[in-house]
Length: 165
View 1 (spheres, rainbow, N blue to C red):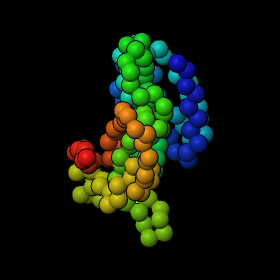
View 2: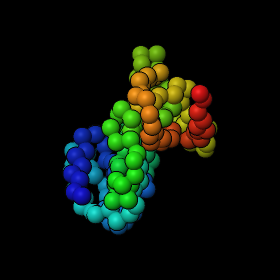
View 3: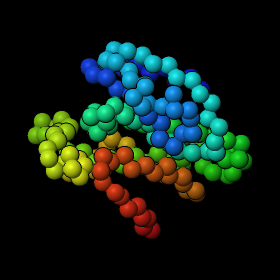
């Protein structure tokens, strides 16, 4: 897999691959800084079982804000074993990503990411939950099996998932 990362931010960033078993040199740590306007190309071959993984920036002092502003996403790793299973495979229809994040908005609808002593100590908590970037999203699932790829993308909040009939 080869990924070209183009940093269109006005500040440095990185790209950290949560859950991928990859060499440290291609992960987004201090050695992988991408300057504002810069590009970084990483190449690796996932050598692991199937997984739903998360990518996000990991620049010291910038991680929380950059994630809160939307710089994050999923990476899906498949293998021969998972392809043999009769799991739902229609992306967004019966194989559905569900990324939950909490955000705080200003009066004009902009993300309000302000840190103070308390949030620096315990983490930044939003007052609005979003699913896949939307407030109160809806999904009409077909009959049959439904695969949910659940991801807690909150800055500091723990989530408890449950289902109701």
